[in-house]
Amino acid sequence: MFIFIHGMWAAPDIWHPFIHYFSERGIECTAVNLREGLDMRTARFQDYVEKVAAIARDEDVLIGHSMGGLIVQKVAECSTIRAGVAIAPAPPKGIAFRKSALLSSVRYLPHVILRKPFKPGYHFLKKLVFSCLDDEEARKMYGELEEEPPTVSYEITLSRIAVDETRVKCPLLFIAKEDDAVIPPEMVKTMAAKYRAEYRVFSGCHVILDEWKDIAEEIHRFINK
Image 1 (tube, rainbow, N blue to C red):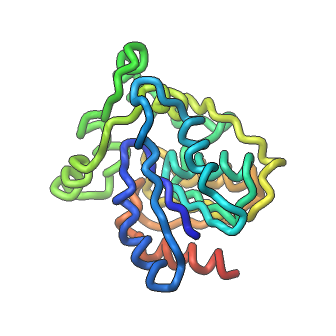
Image 2 (cartoon, one colour):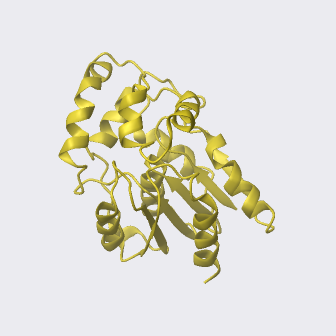
């Protein structure tokens, strides 16, 4: 089974084109809703990891975007899976975000202190996440985003999640987006090197739907190799 893991503020629906693509090729697919059933004020990144690890089996492939890509790394460390794919993944401890991205995130610190779930403002995400989209398309995607637990946002932004690469035994594929303003290709390449994993770059910004078919074909190639 292919298990798809959404990114921060995103929802499982983001994976519909991928699920359709792989289902047509006879592959069972599911998309995890990370926030479902959790207390949004107190949930931590580890809660997400445990939710995915609880359903992942030896023969499964995990595919994650952004925060979901870091969950792939963490589950691969603590569980036995067939393979993992991390698309524009959030970095583990030891690989930091650009200072510009960190500084622009400071405005949301009060939400973390007050344990208040939040979704960043449109202009913040247009600059970092939707930078390659026109305003109409970006606003449509922004409207589909959901609030994230504050602690999860804090842990991701400050790269607090450690992953022991020596415990990762499955093959991994890291995919970067050429014009990604938040997780640039050089950051993804560093992550791939950490695990001695495959690394590919596709055009576009941080979102996955602009080049989804090319990415899906690359995943298919990787899994069938």
